Image (cartoon, rainbow over all chains, first blue to last red; front, side):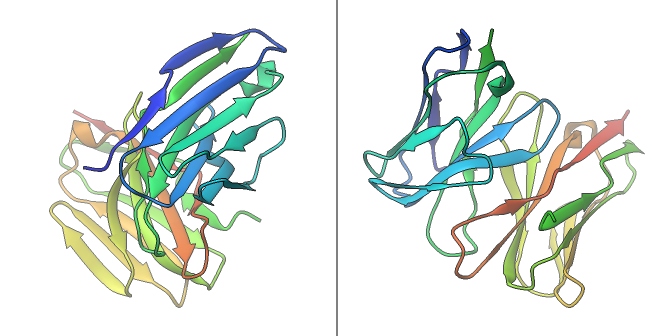
Amino acid sequence: EAAVTQSPRSKVAVTGGKVTLSCHQTNNHDYMYWYRQDTGHGLRLIHYSYVADSTEKGDIPDGYKASRPSQENFSLILELASLSQTAVYFCASRGTGGGERLFFGHGTKLSVL
Amino acid sequence: QQKVQQSPESLSVPEGGMASLNCTSSDRNFQYFWWYRQHSGEGPKALMSIFSDGDKKEGRFTAHLNKASLHVSLHIRDSQPSDSALYFCAATGNSNNRIFFGDGTQLVVKP
């Protein structure tokens, strides 16, 4: 089974602080994604990448930056964390081709206080 | 307008019953459809895919696709309490790196 590992599993941050969420995949997948999920709701795309050293904006990129230094690693950066960014964040990867499935990590629960 | 819409938002069925989840897309470029399932506290996991018109059966789960009406459905026969989860419909096209998700259907199977 393809593996996507996120770290940390949970984090408490202060308003205005910097937060970095990390994602590592061992699937040899080109595509990686960051999603945000608010309690009991759907998945919203923040940023994605289809090749190392390149990232694309998703539907809700404001307040977030992404970095893809290698095929295996994809980070999400909150330069100035805000209360509204409290949520669970999921990283996912998939292979090329429209029919490929997404493999998700376990998620990072972020609480901004 | 959201490209993938799911209904109902929530669904409760008795153990052993049939659960039916629906998904409608608004983009005729979509070619590939997936159902994902998310148990509480976990990440979503791919449940099954459907790419061609008609039915696809995997165990107790049957997916149906009608590309003409852009409608996808998932039917769970003999529902079990372990099927209680948030179910997402997802769609993508040939030339698209993006995967579009619906808002999900919360299924509760009562013992």
